Length: 362
Ligand code: PMV
Image (cartoon, rainbow, N blue to C red; front, side, top):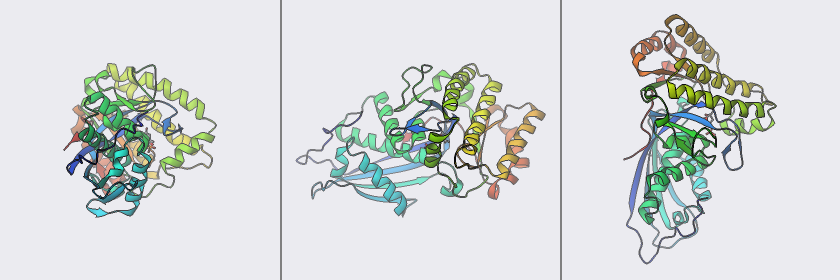
């Protein structure tokens, strides 16, 4: 959809060297994307909150290759200021796959410096923040060199599309507050190819909403998201699951429009449990929850029953628990985390996060 052979630099008028830096956040899915087809296209629409403190900073430096284009991506890559072969190879392959969309990349020497605001090992999904930051840098570079993405809506759509090719869920990180990815009659302009913002369609309270991430285990996952998506293809419940996600998206959007937190929490928790149930009934079956994951869920349910505070959980494809709650009870909930949940986290580690304004160019 974005293939463009005309995006080629004129070697008689080469650009000055320059650099572009974006900070982009992670996001937490409330309606989960789990199962895909084709080139990273979702089997059902998903909805996420855009986070603020878990983010990636990426700087892309570029200079025209005076010696001429050798048809290859020329990339140096640094993660937290250190060369990193694994990330370098992954990024190099991703940029090569993007050459039909950004043919000028092979005319440039590129250096990428990237780093996360959270420990890489913490088990917080870094692909959403990392891939969205890289996609934003690439779109800014296209615009700097060709002036082709002046329209903010067109810029965001293309950045979301490119982020999706890197890691599906990353396409939702481009937008402030909340985003929907996947075609649905419930959201005008929605698409399987890129996400669209829905922050202005939900109650104000979701702009001041917290997501404290309780790190249960920092170990590498036994089954990657990529393999997890693939296992949905043989899952006997797959079709029922995709229909359920569509139905839940409608109910969740209604609850978020009106600010009905009880309904919001019920759907969000059901989604988290469904995601993990799908893993358990895949073939082969697997579990990513750890004993302390379950202990934390029990504590959250008991705390809610005792206090009536609207505190809910979700999980992504891992053992960690995301604690979701509105800003007006932050002091009570932080005390609850200190007193009862921290001891169930690995090294007592909790990443405090909240709903944010989306990416920013630095
Ligand atoms: O973007 P991926 O391929 O890493 O998949 C993400 C899957 C979940 O985090 C479990 C759900 C979601 O919608 O983000």
